[in-house]
Length: 144
Figure 1 (cartoon, rainbow, N blue to C red):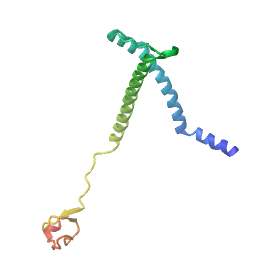
Figure 2: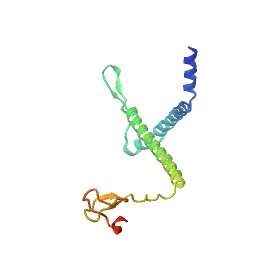
Figure 3: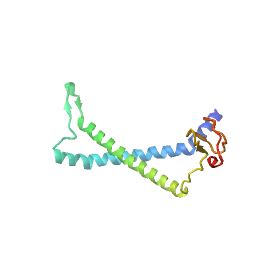
Figure 4: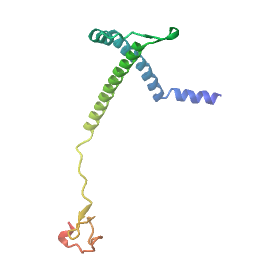
């Protein structure tokens, strides 16, 4: 049992788990902000422009109702949250690539390792003295 507790403690205190926990907590708080933004700003503006009722329901038999306004608000929340996360990931990727490009110098083209046989136009190694495809002897000027 002690070994199990030690293994759990080691797992729970790893950097990845702590980072994930912080991300979940910040994500939940960010979700609340997006929900408040949608309910307090977006829905009233859409209601004024289009006359739509976002907190409406459709009554059903037995006192039940379909709350379509809540569903539409949830869709708007999701779209705003997905767009905001997309922008954040794009910004982080841009910053990451910007740092990588500064550290790496201009790319050098590697030296050629092959040449073209002047007789059959096949690609052969630079050091070849005879073409493997057409069996032609390469002359001194062909050996470049």
